[in-house]
Image (cartoon, rainbow, N blue to C red; front, top):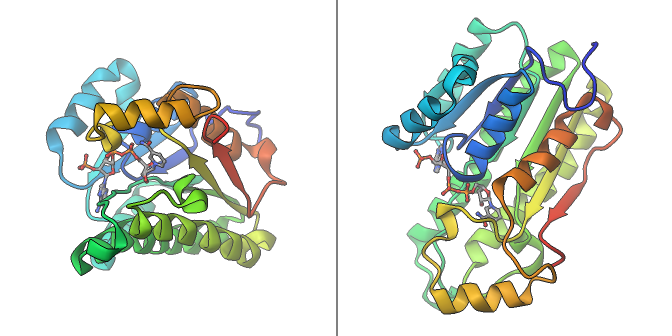
Length: 250
Ligand code: NAP
């Protein structure tokens, strides 16, 4: 392949949850580097369509696909569709994720299951579809959007933290299974990034969290995208099974 560092011209990139927040930042960054991006989402058509419109001419290389990453049949249908359309899938970013916080003593089973289903099972299902295809091509990059919470364990996030730590353990394991086929598997661990996911935090808590971050601010989606594009680049080919913190020093 001739592509240089962070040059994704004509590469096919799948970003789950790629229409809002961090995922939209990733989709935009890949589009700006010449990629064909499949941005998936769960149900918010309005946000997805608005994102595509906001991309202007870059949007011509943006494909939107709506399905639930935690549903095996929907994930399989997605992979069948995309592999019929494209010769090769180069990069998968498992970014779709939710949080439903509560202290463990009060955490209901439904919130536990939903967070694990989307964040962890979704990563498994999407990664399985990707590696089956990437192994044949002997090239691929898989990047999981984990979280610093998976390492630090913030109170009220036992389900979320377990799912994010699970993504890291899965990446480590998968990297050892597929390394000989030219596929790398890594995670990034953002700290607090300004998106809708954390827009429900009370003002006081935001202040408190910002004071705990050594860089004294929340991160931007562009800062996460920069790290993901690095890990997805061909020159990052000797980096696998690792997790990169993007958390302002937390
Ligand atoms: P966000 O703004 O809430 O966006 C979430 C995206 O995921 C949306 O596109 C959403 O689709 C999609 N999604 C949700 N459930 C899905 C499902 N079942 N199937 C398919 N797609 C689904 O979130 P964000 O802040 O950008 O977070 C993105 C990722 O970064 C998550 O994995 C999150 O855990 C991680 N992260 C975020 C932060 C942070 O501070 N923001 C920090 C660390 C890690 P719809 O638009 O259709 O709902």
